Image 1: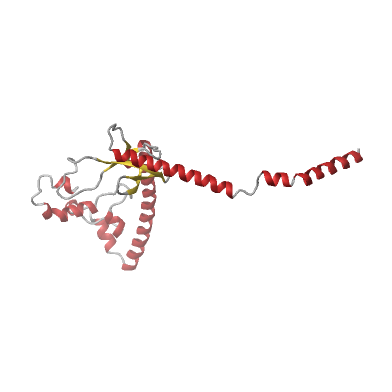
Image 2 (image 1 turned 45 degrees about the horizontal axis):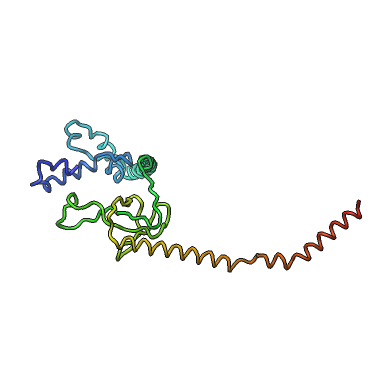
Amino acid sequence: MIRCFTKKRQDSWDVHLQQLTGAIRATENRQTGFTPNFMVFGKENIQPIDLVLGLDAPNRTREQKELTDYIKILRETLTEVHDLARENIKMAQWRQKRDYDLNVNCKVYKVGDIVFKIDSARKVGVCPKLKAPWKGPFVVAEVKSPVLYKIRNKKTSEVVHHDRLKLSQIRDLPVWTQRLKKRILEQVERKMLEDLTDKEEHCDLGLDWLFSNNEPMLWEHDRTVALHSQTL
């Protein structure tokens, strides 16, 4: 609203701040369904147009009531308004999630993939529209979750959401990316071997246990067959 209003008044925008704030407070919010004035005071403030058209009579009537009655009405009104606002916010959140899910594009990366990260950082004196939008390259070092990935470059590492990454299509990549990729894959393979070794060492059941308990098992089997034969 401020940008639209001050489009032709950029040299005197601060003079009109009171008018702008009054307009914002009297404008219905899309998420809550009520104006900020109604959310805070339980009623709409009298606007200049109300005085001109004589639309402020209901507000005057309310202000002329007993103070205790007015406080009771105000409390009930605010409670009802805030309950409705919470329901409207939930509906707005559901709509926003639905709209986001319709356009979401889940990207899956593997350990060792070469990716670029979108550069959203802003620096003083640098126009964001004139700088490169992507930063990198990086190597995917670990899959934290279906949407979170740990990426590394020569010096640092960080955890990034998949929405901020894209797979590299560049053929002539720096040599260090291939070296880092190889080192990461070797670390992953070494960890997998260590995990398999630990599982084998902690396994309680094996062939030795089976053969050491074979004789009692056969004896019980022969005894069961003998009893069954006697019964017949």
